[in-house]
Length: 463
Image (cartoon, rainbow, N blue to C red; front, top):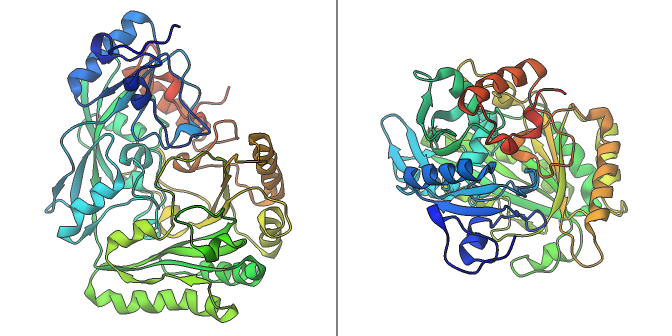
């Protein structure tokens, strides 16, 4: 195709080489760029319908992104029309129902800000910059999750435009079967335009991160795992081995060498619960601090919005290559396998290797939930690194394979869609029967498979 630098064509469709194309196809993971045949940014129903008519007339498959954070998990978009959703309207809070209506393309930080005046919090992840729609419909495992469960369980309605331009609202009372499939079904149903998400009361949170030299990793990991075994449901944490480069925004103490971090949140639903949250946080952090004084320790009681900063996720797009597994209970051998693969002396090129604490409400099926309503694993592993300088994509891929092999005895064979970082890696979150049921429902709203490229690989029926 000949690159064009002119104005967008019919229906606002932009071609490679134009500013509108670059804007519509921009993603967060710079190592997984999107190269569709054409792209358009839409802010309303009319724009979506026009784009769908164009795709049908041109015989193009359709792909959809919001904020572009899941590009590493997405299949290539070559030959497709990409619709970027940036729906107008802003976040609407219903404090009586404790529900937020969120237009597609909205980031979690906007929901947190809108809910805060009502003493309510949202089921966001570790970064306020991540889009609400993809995260929530892909499961979502944040720092409130051991109390609330997966974010998908808090979705109360989904609004979308199907391949033929029909506007659909799916909730428990209408199109309930589609509503079930949308929540964790892997996408490919149409262009989601908005979701309604349940909120919950949070008075204060004890949140932050503590960082130690990686030389203390073995006793720190052992102590963290012991605490996780019977941790309170109000607490959700992660443990990370980090080898951060000396970049702007990275504290000098953390760029001087590998570190181990424990971050997360312990929340109090009301004022009377704050003292208990402080005690629960001390039960975790006291034994860890006794092992060694942290290089940096930011744990503190704060407003709920502070949870968005505990994990120190990058705010700007970066290139990275990574992998994700759901793990069973980690014994001493599992801890050693993890440290041997990503700890000091492992030669790991990964910048971050993380264990996310699950269990609690994460493990409990929601009778009113969607096809993915629980995670049957106590831990999630995520590891990633940027292909900078001498570190190549091939080296990162090779080490991801090494980590996966080391953790094989504890690998459940399952993944969580919102945590998948690489579409080349094995993934599975639906069993065969559920995947077949979802495929039948999807065929009812997209009989020609116009959105088939957007279906998560972990949701496809076995071949």
